[in-house]
Image (cartoon, rainbow, N blue to C red):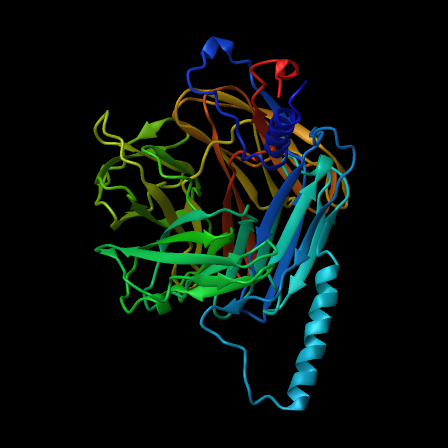
Length: 520
């Protein structure tokens, strides 16, 4: 008699892997590698994305763009849906909205507002109908909530969403861009700050039906910035919370690393960093700690670049700096090495390191054989005086098989491609436009140890915005970033989005044996 439980167990694990991309089946103890069958890659069938609340300014305008590349089958699914829905409005974690002395009129007004928000939440801000063509949506003002998105079926593999906010003047002015993030349980944000000139918020968004509980740890140049306030922060189901990190500690520090973890549940996390002089932008999480990290896409006209790194382990890290430019890798004079003490944030002012030539920064162990994992990010400033503008570039994983970034315009986009090791060839595809246009593809060869910065291809007959998809064709790993620029009131505002692998497929191991021979 066949074992129904065994069949169900294996089938369930394979289905979970195909849907989430997180599950894996391990070789049983004592099994021979030769006995294991080749694993296959299947398209994911469900993807979640979270977009943080756009900002705190009444002068803001936010554009959303969702996109799924063509060619993903979504397993056996022939249909699917992809929507970004409004969450409950973000609240500051320290705020308690409950009050016992509300009169009847206040309660009635509150109920009306609540009902209005519920009605809005039922209507998607963005609804994607088909792969290969972006879908767009808009929001305005400071009252826009975070968005919670889910894509299924053929729209799930490689689904991406971009949130781009323009704030023309006032506090936090700038072009703020972020590729909406996947929910997780662990995030590192170097390059945050508790300085008096900064106002940095951690935005936490919970996509699930039950509350999540998160902890926020801060690390400055001298180590941990102790605070009980950052522990046990409740993020309500389907809602968002923002936390001003300067309220978590009494110590002002220019360079701070923020570590977000969850005790229960999962969240999307991002830091909105604002500076009195240079404006604001989103700081997204650094790639997982690694001995060698790459930070791609420093603009050619950067007037100031600051590197911030953190070593989360028990060992100090000694890092060598390499600038990967158009013609090769060089060690920046006067900035050859950075020493990062364990659990302490280290910063280095690299000034105008690119000197008119776009490049990428690579951090490598100073001594071979002694690779200490680190996380890192760059604070990049363009312009001078009252026309300065800031963006952030975190360390990022390679493009892998495929990576996509949405919300490209006919002008103002620059694509940076970096091959830190071996030479590589990639295909870049400009999708159809959100309002019309024909896709265009172009192949680029990137020499070993260089960065190629190009004006990306534009769809023929473009109407609206479009997506750029980068696919590795051959050679070594490639790291990529897109810079989006917009001139507002004479200021060259800009934002940079890195492009890690889109996780459109998941590896599903084959069964080691014929399950039909299993008996009860």
